[in-house]
Image (cartoon, rainbow, N blue to C red; front, side, top):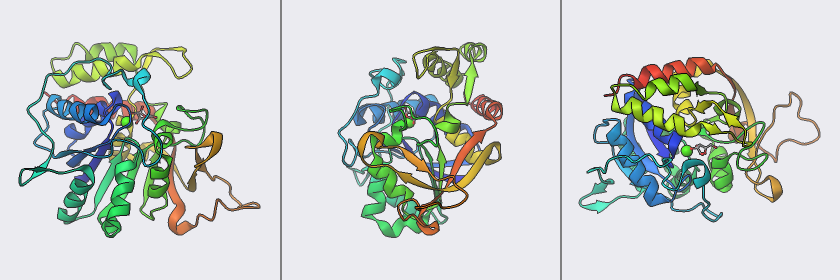
Length: 322
Ligand code: BDR
Ligand code: CA
């Protein structure tokens, strides 16, 4: 199994992703770090603990991290994820608590460092949220980088944006953090809107999930249902995006993706702030991308996906949950 640290801002589709991460035998979930994004940090932590319960997860360490981006102010995504981040789906209270060592609570950066140090093999970080925790980890403990096998992140786009015309939410929310990660020299896979926007469950299938005997599957049905109704341009939509959960499908089934290895630059100023500029040119032209070199700037960018294959993988995997 792949050893994974999951970074989340739970979040309707982060919740779908957590269900998958707990269910899939190919994923060994070492810890879950939380960051402000889709909801405020305390809410993200609470949602994460409750979703782990709903998934019947073992005792996975969970920690709260950055309560705001490095430079941006905190911003609100309640129009997408509801005031509670879970679209008003009320999950039972949980007895789980955040990670502590010798009775003292441990923050996300410390927890990530400790889990990386403790792991005999390098670990994959899957980031489904603004990358503030990860950027802080890399800046605070740069010597930890070799313990990171790679970073697979949901974020960015080589085409359309969602938070702005050109910027995807996670990168837009903390562009400096994404820039630090992309320029760290660690191998990265960008699971951006180019693929994210295509992996969706139809209405009939979502309705079926609601009648499942499994509590976790019914939760998935409710979460997917929440994403149905209104599209990015306020048009009615009859499919529910799996969203962040697709990034975990990408981890276990990368062959369903069409990937190009490209320089990716995060725009940090002006109206396009937060845009990921993917240089897909065959010839460099008059200017290379802001001096990015092969050593630091190449990212595996997912540009196409066999969406039905991911939907099938997702549904088969969570069907194993109680
Ligand atoms: C991303 O932002 C959040 O709304 C989702 O959880 C996903 O991580 C999509 O832009
Ligand atoms: Ca998310």
